[in-house]
Image (cartoon, rainbow, N blue to C red; front, top):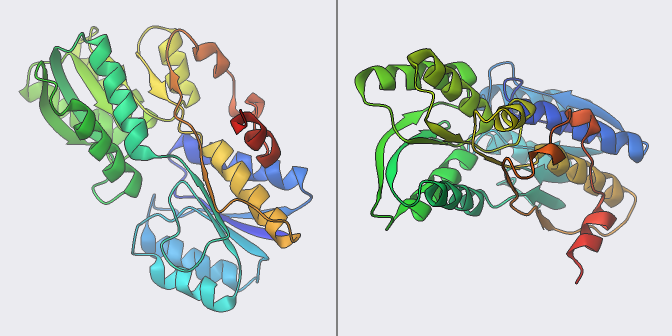
Length: 299
């Protein structure tokens, strides 16, 4: 079986992990994988062109994380017209009928991360929010979750919002610029870990060592920063596990097996109390099969 796997970029370590997850599942299920990644991160036109490129090879299935909620729909529609099954991960596929979708509730995840930060601050302090791209599905949902959690927290003051565009360098530069114009906040609430690493660099460069930083993704650099006491916490948005399960769903569907239509991974907060569970390279991190995941969910 030949699978076409689509991730959003090469700049976010979470998507390198997703590609590894797909490869690990393909090896387990005796399938082959071709990876398609836009050269410009999260570029809808490039992902659309890559979909057409993959269609020319007639893969048995697509395992797809759309880079945009609507602007890849035309190309996805051509997958539907070709009659090739699709499995979505990270973001739902907005066009046609997917065999399955594997993801997480970004709004709930961000809400729990923000509540964790509020509790750490004792319900009082100033917070800088760092978001992803303005039209990114995950960033929109995470910003909604941040806002939901902070609403009504009278002692928490959101003193600014910076778009870090899910980029380490962009987050570093834009937060550095914000810090030049404003007093340092008590904390930074960051929508993903690669941006959080950039925020830590900006804070270090500005000499602000006491600012609390939380992120999302549990990438190795963030786990190391938690272990070193430089970062408070992150949430395990496990793109490697999502891609692994999405690839398994594609293979099992092609074999004629029934697979769940919707798989939502639980929210897990990683901090100094448990970070060692994640303190290993992606290659060494454990992955659960569908059967193992279903076994965990049984009472």
